[in-house]
Length: 432
Ligand code: UGA
Image 1 (cartoon, helix red, strand yellow):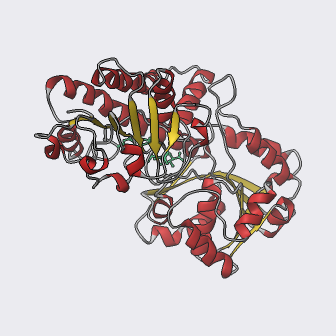
Image 2 (cartoon, helix red, strand yellow):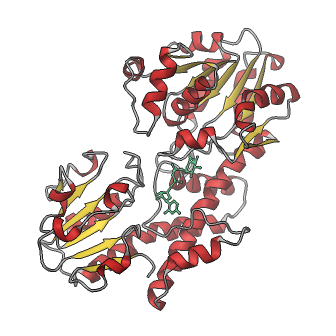
Image 3 (cartoon, helix red, strand yellow):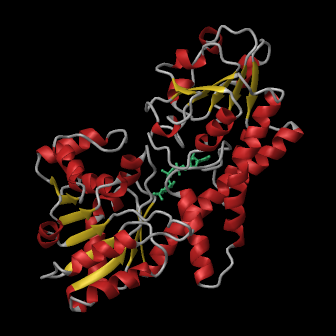
């Protein structure tokens, strides 16, 4: 099939490349000329394991192409995916849909034959109706069909999530469109993915409800972890004990720092905003947002306690600063709250992240990017394992830090607890 992806960010690029790899002709469009020039040279704008190889392979085989010419791309394609960003609006919790509506306008100027227009961006329920209205101002309704097809890709696992999804959700009441999309996804369905056809609004809401539910699960276990710490219980046993109940499920029950990233924080805020637009109080999600916001403060209080309230001039090392492992993404990472706080209290903060230097900390005179794990840990009073990169799992901290008494705060519970039971190193975890 002939597809185009409008917006070559995370969703558009990963989905476009994977569709090309399944044998479709895919044009990836972006108004950022520099990004397109780089992609043509095989330079990938985001960090995602396995993506570069797949881009190069499919570009070489000519199933994948890149352009900034949106009109040409639309004309040449039967299926158009809208994959632009829907960030939180400034001064409001609502999703900013201006990029979606701009693309809808562009599409409306370029339809000469029947097109399936798929919204893959995360958008509030009823946005598809608005997109349809914009396009129908210029184009007869029998020349296009607007569908919602949310994505459930996780950063760092995106390619595997695309190839082996739990489900494919298609929101359309148009039978012909549904048939075409089912055949587009047949290679994934035949590998076991469940295919669900629902209304367009239903598909839009499935995406938000899923992200809000996963955020709820994480906040739930984080609060249970707080109780575990007070009662000398290991939260990991609780996660296993709860997760084995099939009604609950074990995934997304890992306690840790506040959840972050480009999706959960933004989408929980946006669904609450949609709720109020439709006069519905989503009180559980509101509480989750608050619980997550309080979490960084709570962990910082623990840090203060570990250092006996003496933060000034303490050397604190952060291992990993991104919002999770296997990504270079800093968006809404809890390190963005914790590091500035400690820096303002005059600690010397050294961080090491496998994805490199972070411009977010440049403005702090006492925050330093270490070029190696060893440099970061050397002479630390406190080492905080903030992100669960494999690089940190087998470290011998006593060799890395010659200081006699130092503290490790393992916020991801990745080190074996027993290892520190006898020695001089004080080892703290989450939820035990
Ligand atoms: C999330 C969803 O998992 C995807 O299904 C969805 O497609 C995506 O948002 C999106 O809407 O685009 P992502 O933000 O890449 O994916 O990352 P997750 O792996 O979900 O992690 C989000 C945050 O939750 C991270 O800070 C992570 O450390 C935290 N987390 C996750 C936990 O603290 N505990 C867990 O058990 C799982």
